[in-house]
Image (cartoon, rainbow, N blue to C red):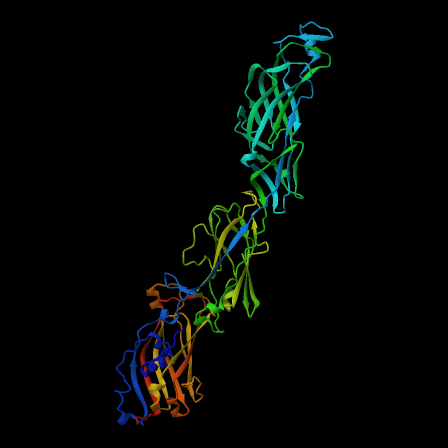
Length: 618
């Protein structure tokens, strides 16, 4: 706070309001100690009374300075603001997926010696079969096989896996049909009709290269084939769109998941032809094998590279917030130990842009106010339940004590609000610093399904503000300290028993004002022989309106008298400085507000010099 130096004319006005008038007041009078006193006649008289005049409005904006921590909103309302930021960082660690490569083979021989012997070919121990001999299997050929899916290396942060999306390099199934037959036989496939593969329920298929997929994504119907005859036939490829874990089977227990007893089936009609003549003996046969593999054919399993996982997660999120230093940043009028803030609607605001965060979070916070390195106040936000930061949007969360949040920037239409009854307790006696604790499980992923990329570091910034509007309840007290210096150059030639100032003070500030002063000499030491009475100014009527007309209408006028008594008249010559303290207190029931548009005005001010006045002009 800047110190003010005032000539004697300003000192007279100062005495009328114990220093506040010296700040910006312009005293309307024509009195000058060097001109208006007849020095040859006035000295030695028992008192001298003069009408000093009135001041202009002393605006509260000129008394209470704004700063980075104390500001005014568009309507002029004062508010205290403390802010900061932290980062929300998390990731879900990778785990391994693998699927069985399987072989579908009917449990019976597709063609046997008996099948051929029952035809019109001549019988015997060895049946001669000519080239170009056609044989159609009378019943559809069917087969089934297990096709398991295993997930390993799952850490505790993964609670439930609902869906796994394979990466491009491991999302294509290869299908190949092969004829296996006894030595010396020369059967080849000449027709395939209505061949269908039905995959396990956890597999969803798309983009077939040689057929069509059913609407549920499980059944692959392969295009019919007719030709001269092949012993191996490439049935094409089909893409695995996703692996779906049904119901409870996706719940993780112990770091692994295995989908067992999952079956793939085949069914289709086949016809064969012979590519050359041969003899078929008893015991010889023809089999079919259909190979389904995600990777290298012949390997027991193929690893699935995971692109994304959908499920429920609880990643470790421990935002760390630096302590909010309060005491070092406060303006002078909030520094005194007597300051008490009975705030009506303190508001804590959190803001986090979750547009690129694939997970929503439940949020709780604990505010601890510290004085002399000891926690003196603890507040839980919210008082019960949880707040929510939702994925895919810019989140604004308010915790407020009044009916609605206070935010000079405007309350967001999509904001989540929580009313908390005791936020003001942390500001009642302003702490040295405030610790915002959102660590140790206070930020947790919601128990909902989300899709994440494993091992990716997700990060967003969370901003927070503590907003304390000077909408106050009864018991609020602020203290304004200042000084008036350099008085000695105007007073060193005078002696008097004392000074009396009377005035009428128009107070548009809804706080009772009590002004006191301590006289000091040029060395800054108190002068015990000079006493100054205090002045009490009644508050304006407490109203929440900041309209100029309402401020004017609710102003209150108080007559005051201030006396300075000198035990030794010569002490007036020692007076150089007045250390001023103005305590402003909310004394009325209900809520009041502090606005930069409120003011104090002094009228009908009169000054009387008490006792014998001595001037030494030698």
